[in-house]
Image 1 (tube, rainbow, N blue to C red):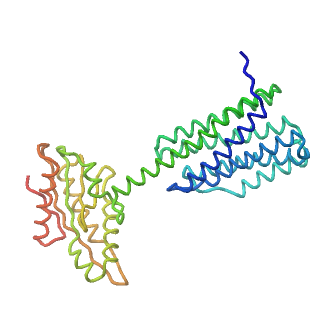
Image 2: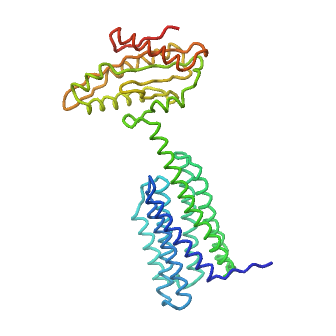
Image 3: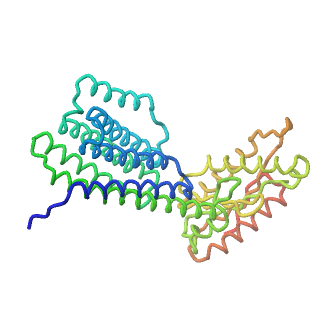
Length: 377
């Protein structure tokens, strides 16, 4: 059975889908935690809808041929330039060379005016389809490439829809170049593109929601001042029973109350930030660092020999003592006391090892501070 689609009806529904997609993206932008690029995506949808409407009006002799042919091409190409900018910024890449974009659009206009190629339906359609296929291919590449930095499930869906949309344009371009393009083929292409536009808007909404969820989870598990994990974060990642040949350390900034009393709480915050940054720079990527109290931190060192764990703790002591912190022109000396517990056998819960490290920390405090004390086996 040969299915026939009425082209005017399909284009009407196609334009309606673009306007609906633009409105949904505007709504997403109002509630998104990272709205960059969404305004350009909404503008791209509206430009594509306007370009399609201008082209259809011209085909029905509503507008002069020169205006609707050149206008619809510029609106279509400009719409996909906005689309690329929107996808790029929404994906996480902020830099856009606007001068190059405007030069490309101006070049299309100048070549069109000089040669008059937009007056030829197939030539105009070929340029539009080629530009759309190229832009969508680049958008697919950017979306997949940024997945390494933001591995959210909806990225794959968004990339698949972008690739499908670009593939349809590329396939239609082949028909245009070979001279076998017909109205039925264009109708089916517009029909499938309608679902692609809806799908892209849905994927954008889903990705935006996933980002919000990640942001909320991060806020719940991160210390807002130092950027390290908090007590809840540590509880989720610390094994219930620490494996043998690992280590855990309790750290406490020496005389931190005096720093707050003499220099103010702003100075205390400055010390905490510098202290946490110093620890992060010295620890391995596999180590865990969490702020569990005012000036109290916990470090977990997986897969480490006892001598190596002690060397790391002593190096941290030295690095903290070497910090140069000033507030209002006054130097603030900072030292740290560390209680270290090396796990020699996996027979105690993490809580027990934390208590051992805490007892060693108090021994370091009593012994004069600015030192490492290892808990007894």
